Image 1: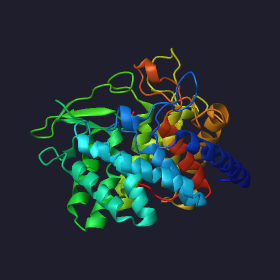
Image 2: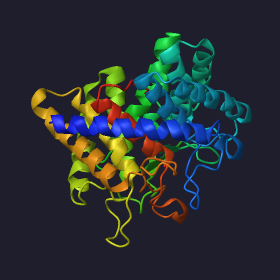
Image 3: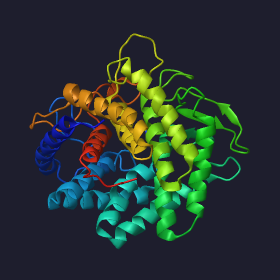
Image 4: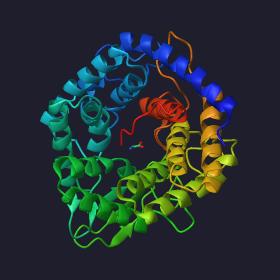
Length: 377
Ligand code: GLY
């Protein structure tokens, strides 16, 4: 149950976020941020310059659109619009863009269009949706995730990209986009989600017929393990596919993965390990998994009977509050809101650091509790 005390906490946290972001927005300027510099604690790198096609390049704009929607502060809107224009370079480059065009343009162009009806933004959203639909494999009935020699690779993160297709279906009034999204969601549901509610990060299909070939470790510890951010992508992704299709199987899948996630994260006092099935040492955590899962759990709670809501809301509150208490960065001189995010199990360079997507889901989670969010997905 969400108590009055939880709402008071969320209100106080929202005020702190707003205060810090108004300073950060001035410091960051037109840059597209990713991870603050280790020494200065500030966003130094501009991803629009160093890696315009990088999958996280929409999240800063997503934060700004959510904050603009919640506060009406024009500064947020101006910087988000600037980020969107600078991402046009990624369309021009094209090489390197993959299924993450959903993350990139849902948070920039589509968010802009949803809130301001900007026609240029709508066109950008269409452009991105066509790119995503163009990755569909009609024999395998899935959207390929990555490029190069990976025609049969599908990763669980894709479930957060397909809402771009649900949006395009309504905007273009062409059901092909939904058919592709549904085929993909079904393929993921039947092949990446395991019977116990845990989820593979990656499944490789035969691109000529869709047969399952292998299940690599991906960003988790090993094949057969349980990368926590992958579990949270599944929780939120299937909840969103339910929102857009009302297919009960998607909600049931989101709930199944949620039950597994809750039982695992409770064991480490609501701080997700990077992988729930990794060796006991070293202990590595990933706060981003907790924030993504919290948003997914709050979405599930919107669609279940009253008696069931409490389970999902309680878990979401515990994740948000515990992670905020232990990993928030309220120091005004530093950029980023939440530390403790980890890119992947075997890659040292992004271990337990602030990463822009953690902040996005933190902001969305707090705004959800206060009914100040809008559905960006
Ligand atoms: N979508 C890539 C990741 O979650 O790290």
